[in-house]
Image (cartoon, rainbow, N blue to C red; front, side, top):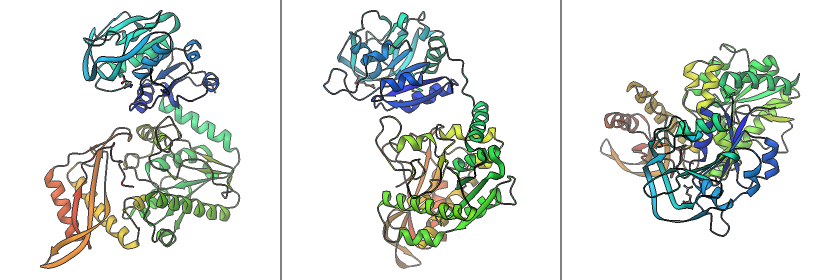
Length: 514
Ligand code: GLN
């Protein structure tokens, strides 16, 4: 497959995900790899261009993250961003040292418009800076193409070798013309044609699935969430009745969700899938009894899922493939993508436990960000209300109940969450907030109801805005709406006497609680 792509080499910078996104927004496929990736592997991938990200180290320190100098002599265009720019200069004979003045935030940069990188960019432009070190002197053969009051080399180029270095961060939206700069790199320096488009992705993926599956039987793990729904429809279009969708109701779904999923994907729904609903509530509850630790809960739920599928698969006969709705941020958060630490294990990230007798796992959305999955969904003709459904984690309410999960707690959080969602919709905010849900804290406190002392649970309300689910900020929900929700929850949901609103962003918090 000769799809054109740009690769991002990750030096541990905060914005590495954004770099990949911006390139994809230019319609060029982009993947992230660790700086430790073998040079041979990079050569094999034959990328059209390489982008080096920012990073927390200083290039002149011992053990600083680095790469082979050869990377710059492969004949592949390289763009270094911040740390990546410093590293390029350092390895090629320039000098990098601690800056007399560190720059942080929006800074005016003067650029040389004759550089390919800055074609169509204003001469004075606002850029996002975040560095303590600076390029004191560019490497031999490089020409300075941008500067600021405090930064003599804010960008440099060596046109003959297609090497470009930028001290600031074009991937961040605060850099007003950053998209243009990345676009210039991708098209004018790397000469990409821009073949990464959703319709092409959908078409190619369907084709690839057909080739891979042949006449094999496919089993899809349907959760009713956006990812697995899109994956299921993709598979249904590719292999039709070779596909069986198994929907496990693990008793950790939102209120009434099981029935809603059945209404859409079941025999009454618009898709012609083989649909099996397994009511496995009790089974999951008993496995989870007494377990408090979040990672263990995730593992138990994930494993139990696999077992249930396995049992269903046996009933169906031989099954060759298992489909999962893994998306790109799952892969990265599990520590399989670039340099990011393992934040949470995702039960739906590939790697086949040996007791499962499927030939292979198919993860058609593995390379997509959430908003790209939605675009693919629309492209496939999946109705809006499903495509824009809120994301819901595989382990479901199991990780929205802090501490031990019990049937009673599930009921509490389901009811509270349903009220919250209803009021958000009543206030007309359901499309404008990225994700919102209720969680059950493990805290009980004293309250008073009908003149009687209560000692009951506290519900936490979460609402975040995010574009790509890698970072998020708490949504500002009007006080009246929150007040109404809190009021209804304590009145209508038994065993809740307190409601909190979570104001933290991601980072430092995650969107889910566990
Ligand atoms: N650590 C380097 C510096 O402080 C690079 C920072 C970055 O990549 N954002 O200059």
